[in-house]
Length: 47
Image (cartoon, rainbow, N blue to C red):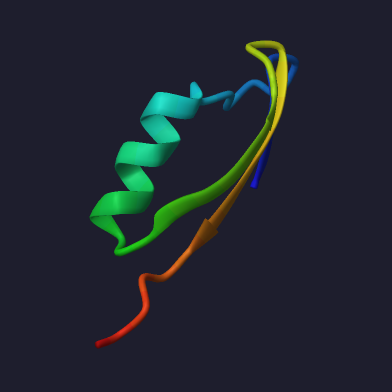
């Protein structure tokens, strides 16, 4: 997912990671900074 501070619904990376964890996702890759970022999420592998 991509967030930018110019978005009126901007969420910090920490908040997005917490919400994603509640939905069963985990972070895979992170690119960017506080102004704008892209966070790739994935479902954990089923064992």
